[in-house]
Structures are given as C-alpha cells and as structure tokens.
Length: 135
Image (cartoon, rainbow, N blue to C red; front, top):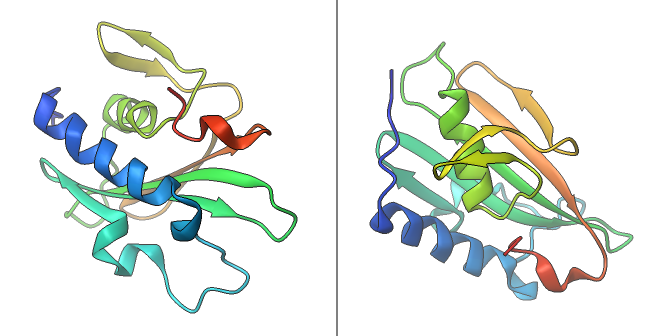
C-alpha cells in the first residue's frame, strides 16, 4: 500500500500547484489547447510515490472545473482511495467528509473516473469564481 505523508512540505507542494493553475492565464482550455497538462511540469507534482496533475479547466462558455489526475508508477494499480480523496481536498475540492486531516469520502458533486493506473477527479467551480481553491 502506498502511503501519503500528511506533511507541511507535501501540502506546500500541492498549494503551489493549485496557486499556479488557478491563475486565469494558466487555466487549461481543452477546446483550443494543443498540449496536455500532464506533459507540462508546471501542472505536475510528485507527492511521495504519487504523480499529481491539477488544472483549473475553462470551458468555452466560461464554466470552470477543478480537474485532478493521480497516478502511481506501477501499471495496473490504482492510487489508495483515501490518499486520492485527501489530495483532492488539498487541491480545493469541496464537500468531502474530512476527519483528522484525511478525506474519508468524496463530495457528492465530485466526478470520479479511473484508468489503468490513475484516478481522475472533476468538480465544477460555482460562479462567481472567486473561490477556485476551495479555501
């Protein structure tokens, strides 16, 4: 089992990523972008043995979504759900059930999907968009 160290250092890594991705000029616009966020180091952080990609995705109508992908290096394995939920909370996702700094359950409006070695989370950012980071 891969663990997440609930350290200030790890929280700062995630906070710097969220801060960067939340700036209007750094929003990911999938309908016009010719790049993938996971291929750009500025949208990626390594947290212990996890690889975290985070964007604020802007749709053509101006709707914003928090978008997080979390992967592990071993193919065919998925990240620990509690780690994934907790990192999503650190990325500003709201509504999850948190106890002792660990997110036990996702928020009701979190979209969640999986791939071979990763999980994907999405959450619409309610307008007005002043609270992108969820804090």
